[in-house]
Each structure stands twice: as structure tokens, then as C-alpha cells.
Length: 63
Image 1 (cartoon, helix red, strand yellow):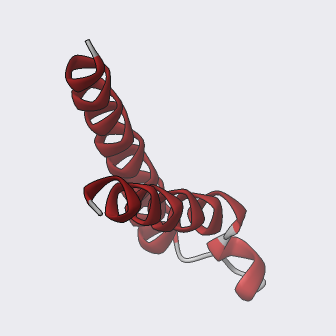
Image 2 (spheres, one colour):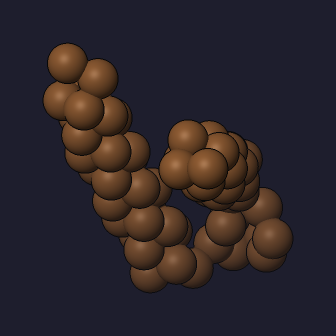
């Protein structure tokens, strides 16, 4: 049961990260809002850091 929840959580994380990577705030309007672009880049960076932290935890648990 715990493994199933973990697999589902990883799937949701992968889907969210994929959506973040595909989204380009400059495409939605001809004139990109620089604040929105900057916040989007920050969010992607934070998401990558969270994925890295989760990966480290999983590696430790697997050892």
C-alpha cells in the first residue's frame, strides 16, 4: 500500500514537472510579463530542487 502511494505521488510529481517545463509564459501574450517569467523560472528551479531532495531520500531508503 505504501509503495502504491509512493508510485502515484511520483507520477503526479513527474506530470507537474512536465507541465512546468512545457509552459512558456511569453507565449500566452505577445509581450511577456518579465515578473511572470522570472517567477516561472524560480518555480521551475524550486521544483527541480524538490525532486532532487526526494530522489536523495529515496536513494537513502533503498540502501
